[in-house]
Length: 341
Ligand SMILES: NC(=O)C1=CN([C@@H]2O[C@H](COP(=O)(O)OP(=O)(O)OC[C@H]3O[C@@H](n4cnc5c(N)ncnc54)[C@H](O)[C@@H]3O)[C@@H](O)[C@H]2O)C=CC1
Ligand SMILES: O=C(CO)COP(=O)(O)O
Image (cartoon, rainbow, N blue to C red; front, top):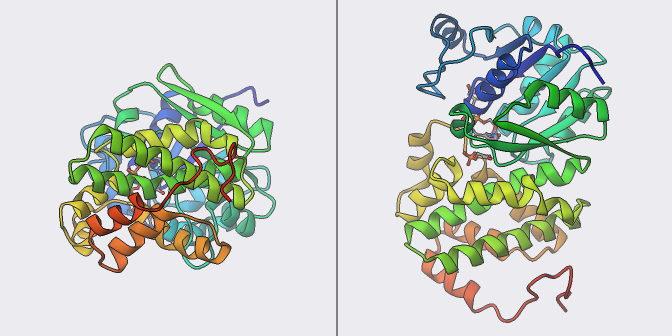
C-alpha cells in the first residue's frame, strides 16, 4: 500500500471530474484537473470555480487546472478519467504518449462505446495494455457531493494497491469508498441504470404513483442484472452501491440528467430539443441503442429497453408501450430463484 498521498490527475472538466478533483485536492493530494478548453482553465485558475458545469461551488485552493495533457498526467500516480463515452477513446489515445507504466487509470464514465459495445475499462485495456485499471461507480450525483452531503462509492479493481490508493485519495468524512473486484459488473451497473432513469423520469412526468415507480425500479434491477449476467458479471454486484444504490439515486433525483431527459420526453418534448437544452452529458440515450442491439443479438429479454427504444426511436405512444408491458403475462419475480420457462 502507498504511504504518501498519491499525486492525482483528473481528465475531464465536467461536473463529476470537478467534484472528484476537488475531493482529492481537499484530501491533501497534489491534484491537476485537465480540461480541453484553455479559456475555462484560465477562468478556473482565476476564480477557483467551474461556472460552466458546477456553478456556485468554491474549489479547493490547491487544485490546479491545465489544458496541457503531458503536464497533467505525466507526474500522476493515479489518473481518473471522466470524459463522456463518445470522446473517451480519443482522449485516452491523446494522453497515451504521456502515461507511465506504473500509473493507475480509473474510469468514472458511465457509458458504452457506440459500435463496439466496449465499456470504458475495456477501452483503457485496449489502448494502454500495461496499465493498472479500476472503475469508480456508485450513487454519486455531482452536486450533492459538491455540497458535502454524505455519499458512498465503489472502486472496482483486481489490484488491491489501486483500491487502497483510491481510498486514500478520495475517502473523507462525507465520502466513503467501498471495494469490489467485479469490474465488469460495477461498470455495467453504472451504464445501465441511466436507461432506467430515463424510464422513471418519463413515468414521473405522467404522474404515476409509488407502486408504479417501485415496480419499474424493481423490474429494472431484474432486467439489468439478467443482461449483465449473460455478459459474465456477478449478479450479487447488483445488490451493492453501484447496482441498486445508483439505480435508486438516479431514478429518484431530478438532479440526474438522464432523469431530466426522460421527464422532458414524458412531457412531450422532442429529443433533439431536449439534448440541445441540456448542454451536459446524458449517456442513457446512446446506451439504450447499444443495449437494444446487444440484447437482440444475444436473445436477452429486456422489455423496458425495447419499450423505451420504441417510444424514442419508433415514435410509439408511451401509453401503448406501457399497456403492452402490463399485459405481458406471468413471469418470475426473482428469476435467479425461480427461473422463467
Ligand atoms: N455528473 C454526475 O453526477 C456523474 C457523472 N458521471 C459520469 O461522468 C462522465 C462525465 O460526466 P460529467 O462530468 O457529468 O459531464 P458533463 O456533462 O458535466 O461535462 C462533460 C465534460 O466532458 C468534456 N468533453 C466532452 N467531449 C470532450 C472531448 N472530446 N475532449 C475533452 N473533453 C471533452 C466537456 O468539455 C465537459 O467538460 C459521464 O459518463 C457520466 O455518466 C458519473 C458519476 C456522476
Ligand atoms: O451517475 C450519476 C449519479 O450516480 C449521474 O447521473 P446522470 O448522468 O443522469 O446525471
